[in-house]
Image (cartoon, rainbow, N blue to C red):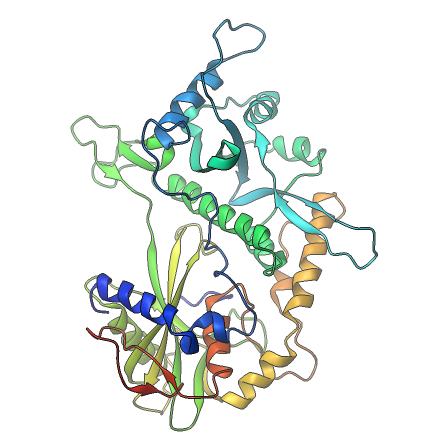
Length: 448
């Protein structure tokens, strides 16, 4: 059951947590130490407004903020005599349309070679209410989803889906806002900019929640309508005899770089929908009753006919840019060591799979112009927000410009696949590793 995204991209959970912490401490095996492009966290991770769970009485907590939100929405400055809610935080709202967050763009500096940077299109609660009102749409508390808060700024952040109101597009466009595909923003993000990476993580979290709300409008148990609860963080069946609780869905996916230790090669695959010359890691959904290691071994054998033995955990990444029917995948990355070498491709899963030498992979990484692709896409987002570029999808720019002579290239730094591949390619010496699923750290040396 293949799930290799275009941009990619166990034992018990306690063992996996121990494994993750152990690998983080081992500098020589740390993905951050060997990534070709240094990141503090994967794209879509490191959300700056997902703070620790706040107490219910805290004004920034979901329950308190929701009650304050209701009071704000009931107020009409021209007719109401209600007093403002006491100690109310500032509310900011991020509109989405068909899975696309509202964005703006700006250029800092006066040089011709300055690159624009995009920003999330946060608008105040009164402005959001005003814009929607002009289009004949009421803003209700049940349409808003709690995203998080910043204690230091006394701000609570919300998301709202405005897909049903097309008149809002020109209204916001006149303010140089634009609804942009999340994948496009992903490619346009400067991964060296921690603020931009944080905004990307917020947008990914918001999209995942809103898409889940759209998918869970009816109870899967009795078929009645569901209603939002806890400021949109869960839903509940409206049927009094059912009242089933429904929580946001996360779909775990294993993604693995399969390694031939003896011949210093890695197995990479291609899907038919990939752009020419692009190769990536194998990946697939975890099945019920299956451990992470078992999923790695099963998927590798199903797709490429390769038997896998040892499995080593690398890192994980939220992936909210899949199809809307799967709003939030969790990519769990592994190195997998091959026990057999003869490839037998399942053509229903892959177009091709081949062994690639470490030297060839290094060369491909060296010539790939990921930064150029990022800057080009950032410039086009800027044009879109200014109304120059009319297109809403910039999928052509996902084809990383890797030069005329490059025989292959890989997903960019926004994908966990890139870091699995680059970690292996740049690892010259034997490294200590931990076998996924082992009860104790392995004392053996793993030659990556």
